Image 1 (cartoon, rainbow, N blue to C red):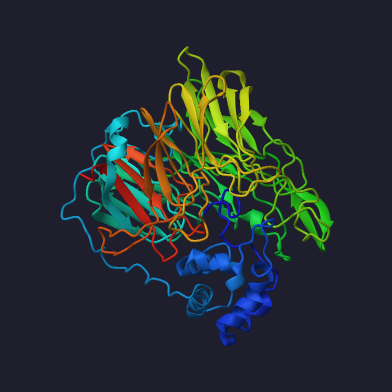
Image 2 (cartoon, one colour):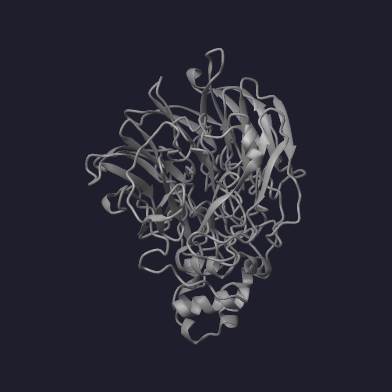
Length: 614
């Protein structure tokens, strides 16, 4: 699960009041209306854009399945304590007026592949988050030319559960996808038929990573991280797990960043939902620290673990009859980046949760790849202490920091590139709306910075930029901008200087996702030679000319589509977090991110696009 109400998840629930124990005693005797009034009304019926708690009308747009999932396994699970499954479903129906779709059957999927095709990897695959260990999100061998992009049509579509599903990985003729509803699939890349489905013990939203592994029965392994803070290794031919390693024990920890595979080692980032404990009066805040764990891909054994914040939390002040702890925060939301020349690993961090100052938040950090020892750190925003719902006004909950920061996390991977003249550069975007160019060979010296958007908790540069040899492609969200006008859109920057080559502000349309027709570019960007793909919250996936920014192709993922696994009129919806992956002439994109009308009828869809749909 991604940082809720941070990086664009407005319609995820904001934690409410500290009344859980009393509610648990009476859950079975209360009607859905009364359940809502007792558990939810005090927050959702008085919500404002300032604290980003969604009002009831917006909850209805998110769909019954999203509400059930949030109350059963998501951020609102504490508020549903004592409620039965039937009562939770009844509340979802009361809020939305719709019945949730049936759960995925435990039996075989309806469109099983007739044969088990072998796994044959190639240089044209897209493996993991960023296409390569440098996280460029650039596919140099896409199997289609920029001139073919306007002819892209749906080749097939696959409906599957979840609301914040992972990005597709393509290895040869197989796709591996993950679901926030706890499903991992292997599909045929050409037809969308199902080789296998694994029913995981927790939500999975990290992208699968595939590699050869002698411990796997088929000698191929697929890896994924789940929200139980485990890294799992499964046989890539069957989906059967052969080892699981616990990465983190923190109760509010989650996994959003895809592990990066390099030279037989998986580098696993950790993030958390501790930012949402604002109103939990009994919770002692805050203790989470983002970390990178190096794990042997063959055996699952931990080689080293490094916390972004090196100092362990300790008591720093007393409030609300409890001792508050810190420093804390610096969650790592995205995949780490590998520097094979210097044997280093780069990652970026989120904000802090407490008043205790640390230089590890809102920072780009370099570690020694072999030992995990910190080499250097560049902090872009100091003293950014932030919890969801804290505004800095009088009468704040005890867990709130005394001075609330702007919430200027880094939520994307750093991109390592070599410029035409041989000089190397590390580029990244921040939720402040600023893009940066750093020198990896001079301990992160800032080479340039360019503020493109206004930024804010739901603004700025969020999930992922892309870069070819000369340009950085930057998507800016600005769903809710703070301190200035919103500037959602897509930019191309000169990689060496950071200067704007072209900009394309968000295109406003009447979209298929009622109430969320925002052109916010929050999702990760993907580039191929001559073209750039960027999705928006209003359910549009577009391709732009890499040299001019002209729109080459526009697809509305919010319109009904029949899927290869038997759903008629399935709707994808909002595109956020994940970006397109491109391999062997096919573009793959998940649509249906919760909270923006996506999946409002319970559907999430993986689209496969090819030239003329062939």
